[in-house]
Length: 468
Image 1 (cartoon, rainbow, N blue to C red):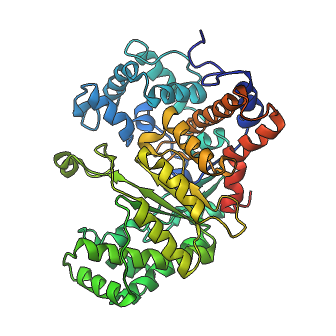
Image 2 (cartoon, rainbow, N blue to C red):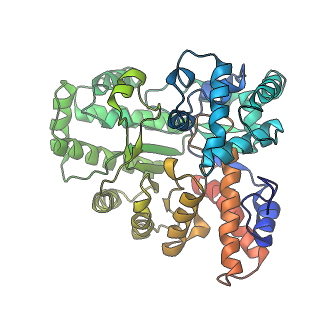
Image 3 (cartoon, one colour):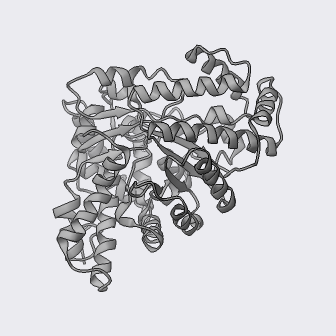
């Protein structure tokens, strides 16, 4: 029997242990998709207590607290930070089998040197110890990033953002971590939402281009893409909850845009046409600038309308969608490929039933002398647990090249979430070690260690072209 979360946690044999400790553990981190605040990084934000750094904005934890019967007052409500922490501590023992049980204790161990279980009994002492550390030197946002051996952070940014804090960080010489923007134009594609017109007005203001037509809209978008590129952006990001494709022309897309600009709703088919042509336009730009394009597919968001109206998005009311993705994804990728050649592209689905579809789809569009040009993105959101990661990697290995996989990201708003990379790396090493144990791959640590280090760091460094 193994000790709980000891140094060989998740490592299933001696080969896994050597791969992790000798090859994976020391590799730096490239966090190419997250939701950290560049302002908080620039200001080296400090945290008044563990609740602020751990529970504010973390809808992963909120969902489990609700499932454990915790009243909303102790989750997002008016209860004190101490009482919210105690409510989370009471929930933690109930989370066995969920990755948050392990992530919680990894964060306690790695950042605060706490190796005891968090529960209602241990919570008061742990509260005091962590708060004492947070109020000492070396626990600001930048400090936590550096302690995690992070080399690049790619935040998620709206095209209308000024990138003020990215520019300030770019000019600094005393913070060696690259903090780069990612281009997330979702609000500019969702023409049937009430956010569309205000967003276009903001785009007009920041771009300096009067938007009276679809052509003006595309010019304004392009100006922001090029501005982001000048600040170091290497990646775009698109939430595509329902995969879309519809044949259209620029003239037809322009007519649809004009209707939406007047505040009128368009049909679902016309929305698809508008998005299809706009994706074609953006894909061409991304290819020109050598960006990577990310598609996050098949989330079903804001299911609880009462709570959405009360609390807004990203508060824990989302789940997996089961829309068919194969045909529209194929056609959209093919359209961009025929128009200008696909940029580097990373495809994620929130539904694990799509694993084989994506793993086989990416093989249709590889090429151009770029290793792993089209990537099957790492297990995402509801799938970033042990089983989800293993199934995603097995699908990729079965149908493509896991050796060219660009690996893990945090997709998080928390500066403590970098332990997820450790969790992932241990699972990678154990998966490969299992293949060795079964005689499926040779027991050659140097050969396997190079593959592990590629997945952990080197592949992403090459893929995104970061100057490190």
